Length: 143
Length: 379
Image (cartoon, rainbow over all chains, first blue to last red; front, side, top):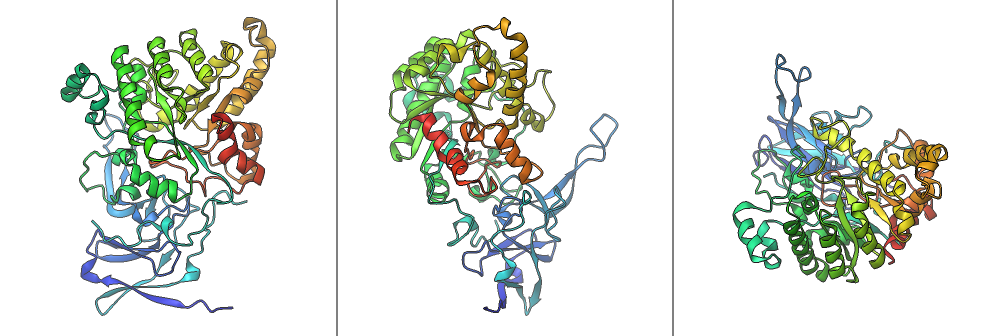
């Protein structure tokens, strides 16, 4: 059986991915690829495959989280947007994910795979193995 | 704009969970939409052209927010930031995108083009302008879409406010080999079983056209409110109201004897979820046994009419807690007869052909993904 080697994937130079930007790389043929996001100077890498319906998660919109402390009323504070740039929404069905953790904010059973990202000599580098990218993620309807 | 390498993973070679290529795939809800009123000008009478040039098409909107990018998938528009400017372009105007990212990618055999906001023409007060708008949209669709790809079938836009004008449009185009249905919004002044509509159903039955009904114009223009208790506040509430609108129309069609009058007529409800069909059949059968004498022209159990004449689109497919519940629902709604695959391309809440269902037994897969549609449209 072939040993599944971790591959060193160079995403780009740090200055090529400024805060708020992303790059999607596809190091493994036929796999969904990896989205690398710069959120306020910190880099995060997520599998580009939504655990909900396998949509291209990392092509979605980066946004904040719309919040309200209470149902609307004349006394309550209005709508607010928190954590601008920290949230990713899948373009298929718009589920919200926390970029830093891969956690799905609307379904606690869901999490998108994350990868270690390091800066090496000014380059953004992700370490990933093909086996990290199974073609069939856990389905919410399994079982 | 972020650098985008390999931004569309579903196009990657060997991407798995693709739809089964050994089975046919028919998608009965694909939206084609004009970019601007000017698209229709070659097909509109001059008086309406001049009015629309300065005043738009007056199609009634519902007044609720949908979602960004005119409700289209942002992976198709390449827009990954809410801050990016938006020119208002709806991706449903792009045949090349449909071909590349849907028909070819998922190997779709046929799609039913179901239009878009033009459904609202049924709720425009001026019936003559409404009918002209529908004719222009149909001519545009035939010219810009149907003529370019033999996989494309279409549902005719018609306005029901003057049934004679609707019938005239059906007579004009109903025998075109790729016209398979007419398209109506759920938003309406009356339930669709009302005898006001019967001349339209008669024409559909005569031309072998399906009556396709899709959310649209709920609470807009001349339509009644989107729910039986009035106007809800938020968009999500209007979505939850879709099953009640579908039920109201379906129950009315059965109770008013439409399927006794027009035994060939078929009705397809798209994008209104599915489970309502189960509740309707169970509840209406039970009540019919008690109240049959009030509608004695309804000669069979309501569920028999439903299973024979009414079809339900699969999008948005409900997501029960587990597969056991999912298969229970399919069994209870007689999915092998009633359920028809729909994607809702190119909208954000679309259902792709590969992950929408748990693996279905082969015979059921064939029914849902192609054979029910083949029988419905005589393909």
